[in-house]
Image 1 (cartoon, rainbow, N blue to C red):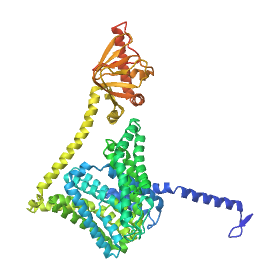
Image 2 (cartoon, rainbow, N blue to C red):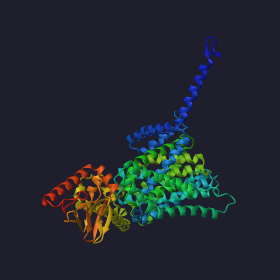
Image 3 (cartoon, one colour):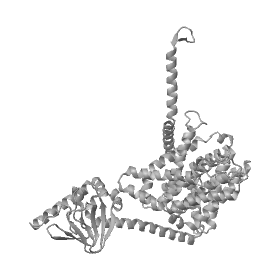
Image 4 (cartoon, rainbow, N blue to C red):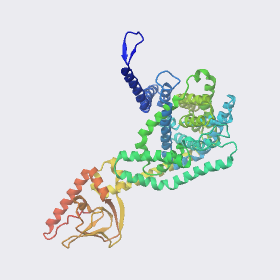
Length: 622
């Protein structure tokens, strides 16, 4: 069949039209199927471009990521990212952000600044939330909207603060430690808010949400006390299981993975724990992804794997965090800056001026110096990731209007941009007070400051002692067994994972002739006797090793080894021996050379004595 074109002078075969339609449908399907790739690719490209421009303008890159989301959103012309896909990617970003918060959480660090951080953060959250509720009342919003709005404005950004402190070389100062402790308390309070807010959504006038791991909203006729008890009971059950079982299973699991020597497998295990615990906690206990990820990080934070876990997961955490901030920018309607400029300025003033004054007043009322109060007030003059999470939750629960969400995003972008200015203003004020001849004002509360510095110094010594203990343990291993000295510094930590401690009482047969080789033994202390086939006996003391030749050759043991004193060994099991020697050929070559040299020396010492193939003998000072 043939069709005439519009001009009537050309005929087009119908099969060609059918083919063209099929091609168009295929292209459309392909574009739809690659929506995830397009969202990630465009998100990363725009984030890089605007993040780089923000950095060149001496602004936090976070500002660029938010602006990138605005450009990819539905309120600006050009490419529009898939908001649904971006939302799921943002959820992964939230999980990894909260995992990072938990990973860096330290009870000891918090306790060092507890006298100021705990009452200060709680007081500041309450007062700032009340200010936000008052502002929301002026806007004509409901009580629920005011609570979400106030909570969102009360919490500062950990990401922005840490970056600002690092750039100003202030992280290890008392001001920096107090600010970080203050934000830890804020983060913990917001975690509680994320748990409780869905449960109270119905009472506060919201629609509620049960998806995404949120607790069910309280219906009108439901018992508030019962529903709250169920919600808190689920959270308590999850926390109890996480804190009682997690510290026993998670470090053991990571140790087993670390023993494989595979860096990518270790990174995968960390991410699997973060995402798996977050998803499992939501599916089984009904708590939020954020809470599950936070406690996954807390469980890991007390392990000596925490630094490696943070280092290995950081690239992916950074990547999805970027997508999280981009997805937040997608929801921002920049026209609000024109439509409601007074509301934007009022919200920004609450964040940068109201919160700062509250924080400063609390620090001074607690009896600490003005200089510390000024530093903390500048640190909190912004809002960030938790504000976005709370605002998004409030929006999904029907508590916060779209205008409130836009105001929070506008205040976040502007306050993050202006936060470096706040630090400069505070520093100028401090210098001005010092130059005015009122230096006594800056010395106010010096006794409390000195007590705080003593607590921080004691905590720093404890942390250093833990690190030094592990370093000394490793150094003792290398000193006792110099053959291991060729292992690179980055891999030396794995030595403490691979070597299993083992003890033997006097008279214990450590190795029996004819047995299959179970591992290689390093003598840490004590003395053993090696009974050779010819009847001769060789003594081995601390620093010696034996049993590796049977592993290298695959033969059975050809001699008996008996403990003569109470002995402590470090044993490298068969599987770990093969893995360790394959990764460190220089150690394997050194061990074989030493064993061959000693075998030759012992054969030459007596024509009647042969050193067995199953046992290699090392002197106390190889």
